[in-house]
Length: 227
Image 1 (spheres, one colour):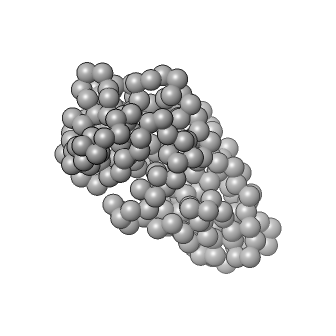
Image 2 (image 1 turned 90 degrees about the horizontal axis):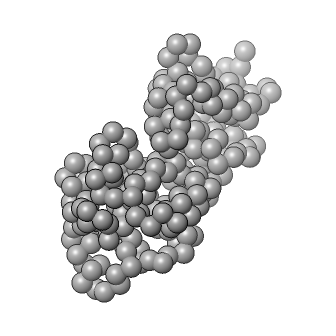
Image 3 (image 1 turned 45 degrees about the vertical axis):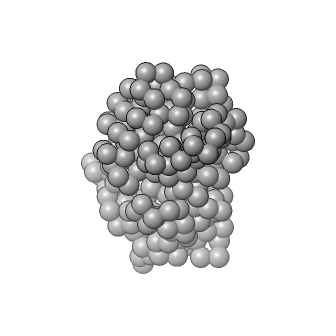
């Protein structure tokens, strides 16, 4: 899942972004409303964490503009203002949920995961392709009775593949949803992660599921005959 964190306090932004990345999200950071709108126009995001008190364009205006551009985008508004009126203003402005600063980072992650379970695109918590299951809430993976240990980034790449079973996904598509703006398109990092996933998902004696489509990308397919 790829997030846009809009926060003008550089220390808070860096701390929250790192915690979110350690929790399995790809995170881009914007320090003001204009940057947030520009990033949103060029990158696909699953959710936005939006500070209300921003320099220049304030958070409420940014929220309304984001909602106008993409009605289904999930927006978690964060602010130090804790009055009922401010909460109502944020929700009326298009936010899906509200978190008061300073917030616990664990609560931020929990709020985001709850928000992502809401039916904007009706994204399921448990994904299944053949006998491969991925629980995005519990952060667990297994194939049949065999549990698979995944790193945070391996989990993110596998989730992208499992949300599009049978489809050939380009490296660009995978990077857009599993990496942030620090991704280097000239690197072979996606190939490296696909190789790691193939060794973990397709164990010896199991029917191969993860395919490399030469010149096109990668595809995760349901169980096929081995060999």
